[in-house]
Amino acid sequence: MEEEIFRQRTDLGKLNEAIEQIKAAIGTVIIGQQDTIELLIAGILADGHVLIEGVPGVAKTLTAKLIAKAIDAKYSRIQFTPDLMPSDVLGTSVFNPKTIDFEFRRGPVFGNIILIDEINRAPAKTQSALFEVMEERQITIDGQKYIMEEPFIVLATQNPVEQEGTYRLPEAQLDRFLFKVEVKYPSLEEEISIITQQHQKNTTEQVADIKPVLSQADIISLRGQVRGLHVEPKILEFVAKIIQETRNNKSLYLGASPRASLAVVNAAKALAAIKGRDFVTPDDVVWVVPHVLRHRIMLTPDKEMEGVSADDVLKQIVQKIEVPR
Image (tube, rainbow, N blue to C red):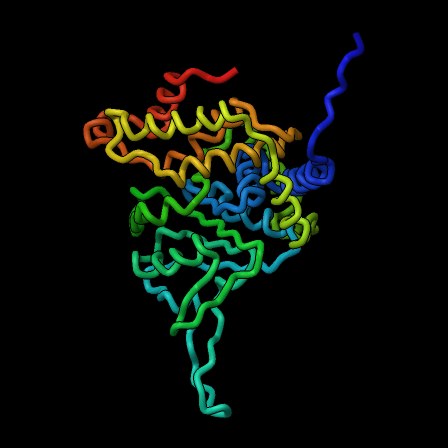
């Protein structure tokens, strides 16, 4: 009997080549942080926003900036501060004496890749300016609707909420982020490599060497491929069971929403594509679950007092549910 040759339903050659080029380019500047880089790429492919959390100095902003530099699209950076107003982000109407009329001046949010630095430094009023644009890819000002140009991705960094001078992000806003990536301190070996590399060549020179790998049209095309990846019904059921368990778990005060289940599936598709597969496996789902759900659930007060983390609870939930074969 002849062996059946497996043929991929989707040609992911260009996607995989581009991802390797992006990883190689970023790897010349950033030491380690492979998971963070993969999650940022997955977020772009899955048409999702990414929240990056970590203490100051762990290259959150630099990593996001390098991802943006590897894509030939309009890049915008907004530094959030306590005195920032919604109009500073979205734009405002300005009176033009020549036309004797008001005209809309677009704010920095009008772009393709928007880096919001220290998003939790601004109060709720300014953070709420992002609600409509992050979810619906449009803003409404003075009754006029403005549609964002594709691709539209928000990459936001924040310091841990227990640090001084920060505001906790509302749950509704957190839910609009596909991933929450937690950036840890580097290992001893990685820190030695960082110091050695900076001793030989400064960051500004390294960043200047990064060239665009993908265009706007490439991103839109590759997203279409990712959306078309195959997902078995039993894997969809596996995702649904995980989400349902977050709503019934005694350690959680707030479970995940249906938006979270869609986010898990889309994230797993993007991860599968990054790995070179045109189908999703249970391992893809298990790997993305903590990154997709850690910011969408709330621990009960007693569990918080015990020092239990959201990741701990999610790990227990996944282990409890039978993995499809």
